[in-house]
Length: 88
Image 1 (cartoon, rainbow, N blue to C red):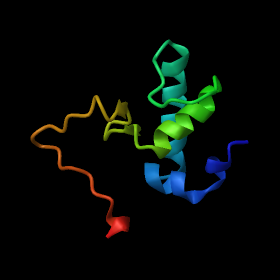
Image 2: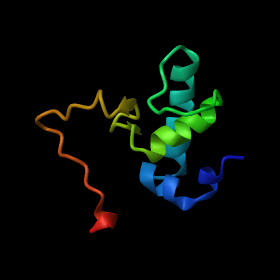
Image 3: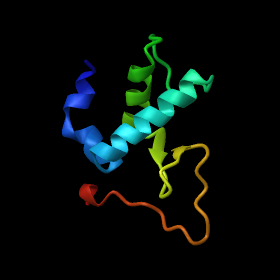
Image 4: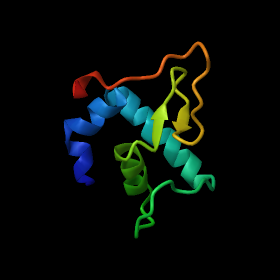
């Protein structure tokens, strides 16, 4: 099992277990459909790649539960930036 999934850090980073599960599932579908990994790893294990993408803040769910990459994300004029209040 991937050790990072045992920790609460990844759950809190995404915003809960349901969102984490949704993000993982949607990203796995994208990778299986031919999307390129956003992290460099010496593994072909897609689950490990997705977990690293989450931990490195490469992917997230938007307000409509769609997977977004940091490269894709362009906040609109009515979308406030997200802040990590736990780091304050």
